Image (cartoon, rainbow, N blue to C red):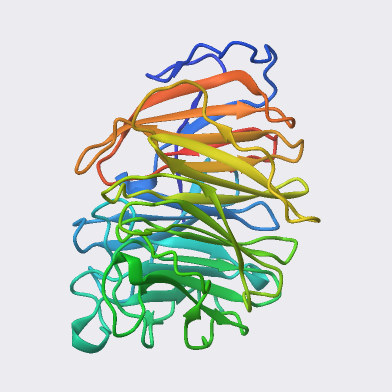
Length: 393
């Protein structure tokens, strides 16, 4: 069963979406049409992935932000229609949306199987020792018509706060990552990024291990993001918390399927409180795109698939304060789009804003804004078969 979803097309600009003045030096031509798409069923926190056949796989949250449900739909026509929705979480109300950064993440793995991981809500089961919140995981079953019963993947590294993440590759590896204090310790300075790996498409997972041995801490209320690139690399972005003040963004990279990660600071930020940020990755021509927030601005950079080196960091044009929750995508021509939100804060929605760049990283005139990002929500973006971009909010 399919249902229609209307697209807001911005070629001529309508329905409340407005262009933003091009930055000085922006190239005048525009080759990539941007469209807007609302999350089905009035849902929030869209997360998506495109499989090798071009199908759009989308999850979203619905219900009480303190304890609601995750739903999955698929589109075979670039978002014009979506399939009947399936509930991901097997226990009703076991997902959480409060705070924007603790929601579900999605990955597509071997045989186009869908994998989802999320922070458990206060009512979620099974809990850890002492009633600790679980890091939950489920995958689409072999028939593709339901999700398997949810599982808690934490063995010992309990203490979830900020959100976890999931990644998968096309040879059967699945990775789930989160941050929590080292067992027996407390405090942000003692938090660490943990990762567990499955080599059998999510049938089983090894016990978690520390992804990075350097004692950077981890910002308690910030989300992290893990990503498996087509080049076989595994990438992870998280916010550190040295001395409760040095909350720098770190990029971890593994070339051996998550066995060992190298780390580097990609953005420094001295702030005494948790800024509740997220990060994003996307496959790109000859590499992987990474996007993050720092000091009220959003940034992106390309990681070269051959050398592993990072390109220059590109900031979103303009100086509007309060930019958050970036998303990024790259088409086959090497053009990219950076999407983010503005005016959002605790228990408050805002606007979605985007900027298209050419393959050299120069901003094009195609830049726009639309109001109406719901409270507790995020934004997402995907590349259509025609090379254009669709922003989901």
